[in-house]
Length: 304
Ligand code: GLU
Image (cartoon, rainbow, N blue to C red; front, side):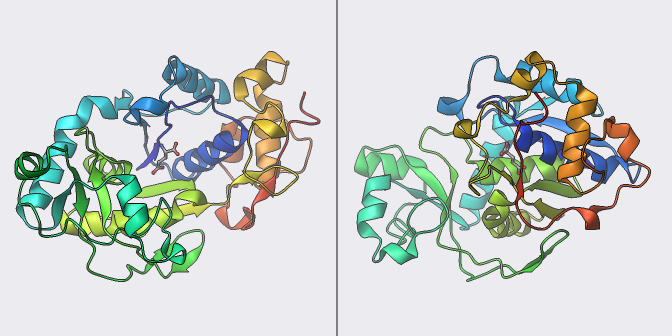
């Protein structure tokens, strides 16, 4: 069981399409099922219309899924329940620190973790409940998971053995009460009985955090498979400055689905350049070991 998990925060581009194609191929080549989950919890970054656009793009690519799409905003109660359980069991705690305070308290810049400085533990053990934290400080509190190990080593299907280094207590519920990505993704992947999480390797540093949550909540861990990102000719992650590689724009410029899938298959080292094919044509001889283990340079030249 796999999943496609787009965040409706912008238009899907070539790089997203390649990751989704690989997620689809990996599961479908083994006859497995696949679910679509819309990760729409990142309020401020959501773009109106992006969900419908993502679905249209995936369908245009010829990627399908089983069952109805699941939206994270429809599952908020489940995330809140998981967060409360972790607090009740002493594994997570309310934290009233602002980002600025965390930055100022971090002792050295080299302690910076993937998404900001390492949390120095200021609020650990200070409050038992969100209500208590609010009553004393007047501030809404987030919830942080208390990390008591230095690392959670794991073996990734694509990148192999990982040290799984952890850097400090991390947020599982935001101050506004909404779930943090780390918690929502674990609750959902477990509830949807996902056995393979295939995603881009920019999320590799999140994996040890997610493994801690699986273990704390007594959930079955999936296998992780982190594939390299598509980058521009300058080696940087594909972005607007590399030209418009959004699927919508390619489509509007007359690129056919077959030409695009063929190009993505070329970027995955599954077909020679210039092949035109559909995703289903790639199933019979799909071989993950052929996919390059370095970032691949992709652009829209030659396509449109
Ligand atoms: N929704 C995330 C993204 O679009 C993917 C999260 C995941 O695969 O765990 O980047």
